[in-house]
Length: 322
Image 1: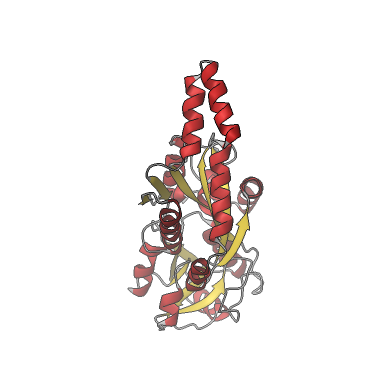
Image 2: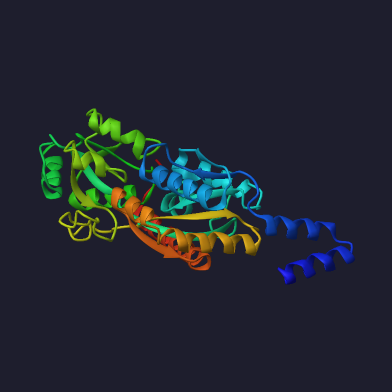
């Protein structure tokens, strides 16, 4: 505190009101409403996680928090909103595999995943599982492939994010198996799930499936990521099925580029505390996700590496915009 006061006094003596104002803002942070922006519709796993964090921040920092769902365009609408926001710590975005490492290769975006964000921390790796209705004529992934090959062109499916990790991995699985299927885009898994239950699509690869599995309305077939599903370890991963690729989905938080380091440090410290909370463990169990913490710099490198990897993989696979 003495160092901070000396900094303020020195800045004032030098006649630098801008520096004084910024220093005071950093010292008083947070002092007003914090907005969380995510690129998914209400009701899914991403939405549930973001709202839990918003509640946690409100409790710990005693400020108002608001969650804004800006779904669509592979989460790039939300990412664009975040990139254009003022870097003062009052606009925070949910970072996922889709909007930051994949979607920029499928559409023109006005932001750079490597330059336009301050990555705060990663907090989980997400399960995005392949599910079907409980009354489907197939009970396992191999049975699904056999049915789809026997009924070419009749399989309709979707994922939690168009041009996202789950779609890419599943498209490759179907190609590998010689399956012809029709992809039906939705704004998010929360919008696609009613379509699955209503019989408008046959397969969905997304998060937020656990309550419907437990109630017996849908059936798990496979996990698109690299890690087994917590509490459903008997379900095979794509790689275990011999399918070409599995892509691990993750969630983290970011702010616009230029966020003052002291504010970024506060968020990182909050993240470390948060994932140790019993309530967070309960959330992970509910969503069948796993806590996975990375610091801001570690998370920034991880996102940058994933972005470069997708830049090599997508052209190799011949994938094109939907």
